[in-house]
Image 1 (cartoon, rainbow, N blue to C red):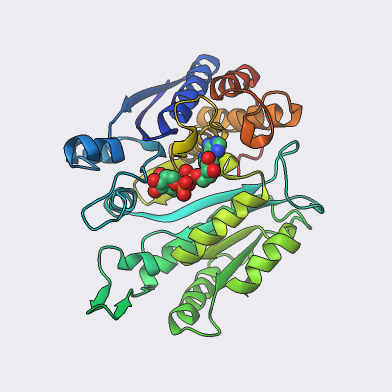
Image 2 (cartoon, protein in one colour; image 1 turned 30 degrees about the horizontal axis):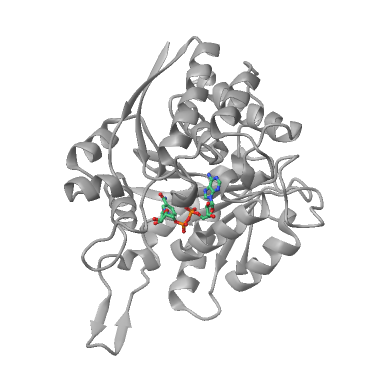
Amino acid sequence: MSSYKIALLPGDGIGPETMAATELVLEQIAMEFSDLNFETISYRAGAENYRDTGVTLPDAVLEGCLAADAVLLSAIGLPDVRQPDGTEVQPTMMVGLRRAMGLHSAVRPVKLYPGAPCVLQNTGPGIDFVIIRENLEGLFASFGGGGMVGDDVATDTLIVTRKGTSKVAEYAFQLARRRSGRPADGKQIVTCVDKANVFRSMAFFRKIVNDASQSFPDIEHNAVYVDAMSLYMVQNPWDFDVLVMENQFGDILSDLGAGLVGGLGLGPSAEMGDDHALFQPSHGTAPQIAGKNVANPLATILSASMMLDWLGERHNDDSCLAAAAAIETAVAEVLAAQMVRTPDLGGASSTTEVAEAVAAAITKTPVTDTSH
Ligand SMILES: NC(=O)c1ccc[n+]([C@@H]2O[C@H](COP(=O)([O-])OP(=O)(O)OC[C@H]3O[C@@H](n4cnc5c(N)ncnc54)[C@H](O)[C@@H]3O)[C@@H](O)[C@H]2O)c1
């Protein structure tokens, strides 16, 4: 019997609703896979907590996250809850968690499931690539810093280090090794997305990715400028497998990616460190639909699948890997059936009904390809 301690951060807005839906699916997994046990501890943190106590991420919550085997977060932040400088509390908490947990690589799968709505008329041989966003440096290294000269000039500094870039590049090549390659022809290929034609920092980023590729002779690699990549993602997304890029570029392109495959309600993500990992949907707290039981829970549920995949790899636990695959297969089945879906996907089902449909579709399947 494997037992995993999971810290849950339900957060604000629709966060508690998509988290409750995901807990329902995890309970079903624990019933189906009797050798798996999840000890979940739910913590209060985020904008509501800040409104009530003046603290966004209490020390005890951070300690709980550091002590857990994995962290599952749904969404935090509310536009009307702001700090004295006018900014929202969300970046303080997210950047704080990333720095404290050393989460160097954010993983954003962009996968078009059969039955999911797609804005593209031509989906070619399919869309299934992963954006790896450097998660601690780049332009976000400036968070909490930056400079002002009077009321006339503002600066933020973009930082690229050999250590940080090597970590994210190695992660990208390792992930490519686990995946079955790009839809166009099955080639396993890492693409460095940068602006190396203009900036020294970006030429350096490309060089480090190139250096990392030497340890992965079985994986191909190339490089594309970020402006061209935003075109290719729309015109020929099937030509890509794993994309690795600077923090701010990844922040922007991952929303474009989610837009290609059905929207934010279908965009899971994982943030990986050497010792810790955090999993969360790409979306925010959608305050306008909060409390109505209509939010799409699939991004959070797929994030939980990524969490089990990571735990399975880390602990060499085949049962956990199979559980991860079972969740993804169940989500794919529900999407393909086109019966139970929330309004963002054109349906009329509730958050709870979608979670129940996914739970009902879960069966114990052997491990095949668990990569996202
Ligand atoms: N990591 C996070 O926790 C995170 C990320 C982004 C934004 N936020 C916060 O969320 C709040 C709202 O931000 P926003 O409006 O820019 O982004 P958002 O992602 O909350 O919403 C954008 C749009 O997508 C819709 N949407 C998002 N998730 C959905 C879901 N699961 N099901 C159905 N529809 C969904 C919303 O209704 C809205 O139309 C802000 O306070 C922001 O700071 C938090």
